[in-house]
Length: 474
Image (cartoon, rainbow, N blue to C red; front, side):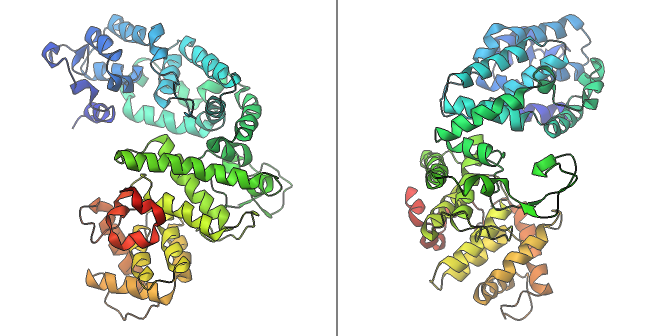
């Protein structure tokens, strides 16, 4: 299959939609199935068309053999149209991040020699934030702190090289990959400094996605309140402190910012209230097949809430921190919502935490079966660095009854042949590795054998006693 076909599929199959009768496959300067003119018309009326960025459109033309500079210029003119920006404007006040596709369009246009769209985009994002809308302020902060990090650009340009090699070569864009900073930072070098005040204001307004960015400098989808980092000299990447004279004392920016706040209880509840609303609305709507930015953030913040309320007892990081708001029942609410939230296919960290949660937080004998099933979803994966050590750490904390139940289930499926003794030895590890490997490629075709964390969990009656009122959503 040609690479262009994969790109088109990734753009929601736009180029196979509509106007089929107008397509002329023998025309080289077509954007997929469309002439440039028909693509331009489709772009402003078909939401799926907006997944097609300038380089994607031109790449399909180059692959077809087009070398007409006038046709390329006509494609670029589409994205210079004043109406384009209106297609991506924030209309929901709760939206806390700018449209990723609109960012890509602006960056690609900048690479092609047109800074106007990205400058107008930045002006709009800044003006929205200055209006005092918490969602808009948070969007500005997320743009400045997460979406424009130089490591983000490094990965993004590598993706461009893989997906658009002809366009990169044709327009001589290779030098963009040699830049040390994100392109947006080139024209807005003070972006991160501007974000600081907005982060504080949005958090003070009680907007949950802003709390992690203000108090921990982490995006809501990557917020890890229980993870400590060693202070060492270096580049300052990933939260490591850039201090050549620092000692090896573990640090955690969130707890340092959080524990002395007089309103820390309110902030904790903000995290759960927002996550609950997003997760329940999505499950109630039945649209659980897509991972949206809101849902990814909500699932992670619900788990973070459980970790904060349990003083990290429900974290796989193995740290014990006192946040000053410990509440076992509230921790359970966070865990209940986190495990049923639609998300990525293999949420192994959450599955491990959930296995321990069920094993330790309940008295029912049935908990051992439920915990053993959850353990499979977070089992050993050889390809992930440090993953298996974390699985070992969780397994060592499980009761012997749960380990024995996992051995029994694995034996039933032919993955374990040793004694059912509740002792997690090498045979246990190898059996769980085989079980997990099978289920990673099964994609839920045999739910009786392979557990998926997410809404599918609600389909298992054995899970309901451990899901609280979340199970009532279906």
